[in-house]
Length: 298
Image (cartoon, rainbow, N blue to C red; front, top):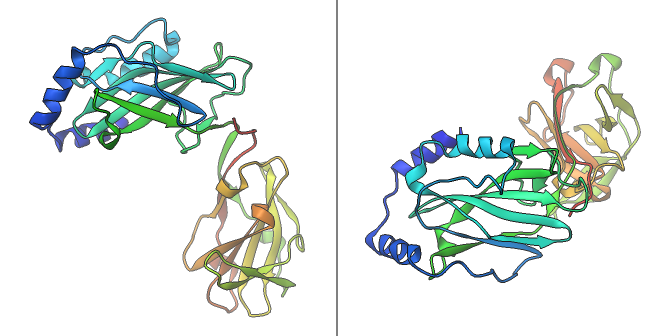
C-alpha cells in the first residue's frame, strides 16, 4: 500500500527548475551540521537525490531487509542518511534513509531505547505513526515520517521534530456485545454534561449495569439503557491501566445516528442515539473495536 500510494503521488509531481538547482547545489555542499533542538526529540535529514545504499551498521538485518523492500524500485529518488541522530531521555533517534522529490517525501527513522525495553512493536509516535518493523534484540523500531517541502531549509535540509513516543498500544476488533444477557433495558439515572462547544448533553451515571466483555479486562459495559428523555445509551468504562485517555477510541460497529460524550476525563465513553424511542435488539451494534495505550509516554 505504501509503494502504491507513493507511486501515485510521484506520478503527479515534477521538480521545478528552482528546486532542481537547489538539489544540485546541496549535493556539493558541506555535510549536514548538527540540528538545533526545537522539541525534546529532534533530528534532521538531508533531502538530496542520490543512490540508495542502506547502511549495515545503522540497522539490524531484519530492519535493513524491511527498509530495502520498501525502497525497492525508488533508487533515483532515495538516499542513505548517515550521522544524523539525537539522543534524549535515553532514546536515540537516527534518520537512516530519505525518499524525496520536489513535493516532499518520507524520512525513515530508527528509534532505539538505550536504557531498556520501553520501545516495542506496539510503540507509536505522538503523531500516531506505527512501526514498520521492530527488532527485539536491540529494542529498535523503524518508522516512516512524512516530510513537507514547506520545511525545506535553504541549505537543502529539512528538520524532523518528534515530541514523544507512546508504548503499549492495544488494538482489538470484533469485541461482541452480550445483548443476549438483557431481556429489556431500563430507564437509568442520568447526569448533565457540557460538550466541547458548550452544548448541554446528557449521559448515564457510570456503573449502573456493569458487565465484562469477552477478550478484554480494560474495557467493559458501564451502563446501558435509556435516559429520562428516552434516548438509548451504551456507556463503556476504561480500566486504570489505560493511559492517553484523550486518544482512546471505543467504537461501535455501526455509528449511524449515534454520538458520544466522555466523563471523568475520558475514563467513561457514553454513546447515545440522538433520536429518542424504543430500539429493538437487532438495531443495536453487535460488536465494538477498541484502540488505546497501556504504557507510559516517553
